[in-house]
Image (cartoon, rainbow, N blue to C red; front, side, top):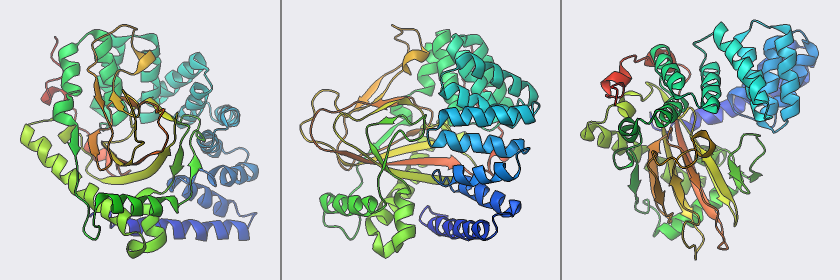
Length: 420
């Protein structure tokens, strides 16, 4: 199934959400209706409506620890960190042996800067359920903070024996390799020549030039309505505006005929992903190719970054393949202004370390980058007037695909477990 075909699922999901919202509003005392609406908000990533929906659930069921944990997660998504911690603590008081509750509280504490408390919560939760991706990730973050490369490497390798590969897990493994000084193995995981692809697609059919295509694309995306970045407490995009819904949102709202540029770019990415996979196969690459989930879905989003806006170092945590398409960039940029830089993750490594390979790329309209979701990268601010406009892509595993993707021999097959 192509990503364009998934738009129908997006449209249907929105329709179901509105039906459930109506049912919950019509029967405010119906706990089942309230819970179904809250769960639908989370599934559809509706950050603005989820907290209110979960607030109604916990008001009606104050002893429901699972609801309190979900409430905590939803509050974190809108930047209410203190509220998230309070809800997470309530969940833990109700269910001290629930691993999922520990995950919700741990991330809230970490976001508030209470690192030692967060580490302890994650470690207790991990002891309850070592198969939880959220708790595994939290424990890995604790080991990174301590600078314990050997323990982190063992933790990541053990995790790959019991859960499907994920972007955050490979990202943590790269940090372990750097801390251990395993330069050759790290270079294999961060082989930019082999794993990062730069392409310049032609103007799609129906558009005279890239300029006309980009103008139409920007107009379609801006019709979705801009939301300031940094609403979610963990947002790495600073001083910018997000256009939630992305390509699929514009097509779902206006139809393919009403959003032809968005539909064209979605088709382009679909084709370029297929080419990327063929490129990997031809090169003999193993890790990225074999870690592809058996089922995927695509998240896209447009981001408009004015002067002085930037993106902090990050990875795309649960993403197999990431992409970014440049629609517009400011004229007159000099040096590293506006550049995307694949580089070490700042405070996670000792200062002065030169083990991490660095690649700096200058943006230009019409450039599409494809790279593994575990690559750490950031975007420099610009002093030039004008906006940097990009469409981002994240190919993620479907919920159903994860249990079937266990591949315990993956690191060995890729030659990454040999000692240097």
